[in-house]
Image 1 (cartoon, one colour):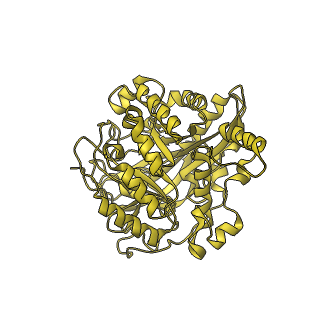
Image 2 (cartoon, rainbow, N blue to C red; image 1 turned 90 degrees about the horizontal axis):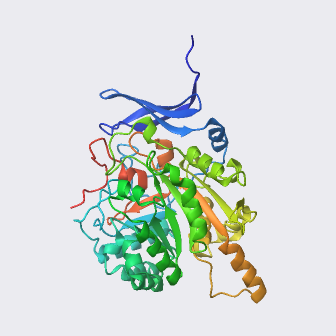
Image 3 (cartoon, rainbow, N blue to C red; image 1 turned 30 degrees about the vertical axis):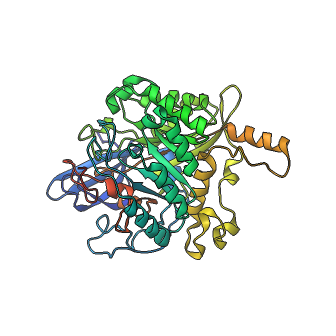
Length: 464
């Protein structure tokens, strides 16, 4: 009797989860699942599911793949990927969104945390933040800034930091937060908005406190509602960001979407993140402890009851296609999701803006990647609140119609961050989400957070 057919989808390189040494790897399919198969000479073979669904894998593999050289190179190639990040000349995409970890402190100690943050830690001095922003502007051009941590809102001077980012010329600022302080202190969020904050990237793992007790260590659903209320009052858009962990909250994917629809237009998007096993996490994962991107899409399609299809979701235009999916939808008065007919043409930079460098996200002249600019325009166009204080030339009636369209749009997306078991260096080289260091380097997010079985990291310094 023969076993299941084994298909190969190409060779790559990865790392060993035990020692983080770079080793050969192969993408293989057995049945309907694609695995990353690799063997360390010292620690043996590891086979990990990375994509469950050959139909979508075929569609994603045929998508357009783009690459662009970094605008500037900060490190030499010595040991090779993933150890020469900074960026090095071998990286294949420019920065799009750059995280600045303004603190390693947090007011929670979550059982699941990529940063392993806790009560103790240090704040990044504001002078170092200014220097990092100057290096970013010179070396990466116009990027989206995400203020992260730890928990950024433990800093009383965060409005000053937001104002500093604006003063340095960056035109889109997100706050990555658990929402506790902004819900408890609406005036604090109002100050952030006045300083120039565009969007709250709100940790939002489910609609029941049972989920938060498992993933965050305490009941938090009421705190999430208060955070959204504060954002509504401040006029700041919210993106709900669920970390999906099988057996804990994957059964609430549809309920999260329904909650988001009920909080529109303040809630602009839901951005799912399948759990990655780096930092502080439940331990060495088994196959059943992973959820892959097509499984998230299938759950969304099933919950919509036939109003949306797999074909309404698309891979990213700048990052490796197997890193993410996104879809922009409208919500009719009955709450039914429908593919947004304007999404295909309404979220891209115009050809002139992409090449002439005359506007916001497209300002670094001939060196700017059109695909990165397109991704930035999509995010800025969907994740910000509708511009209530702007009136189009066509008059009030046209403006009301514009607000109605904007207020009924919801983006559904996901990004699969890589850990030591799933790391594919072809994907990593095309990463455009980076973490800024005070020394001027920018490190791809998955490399920066990469840890071995024991928590040892290549780049992240332990919280103190």
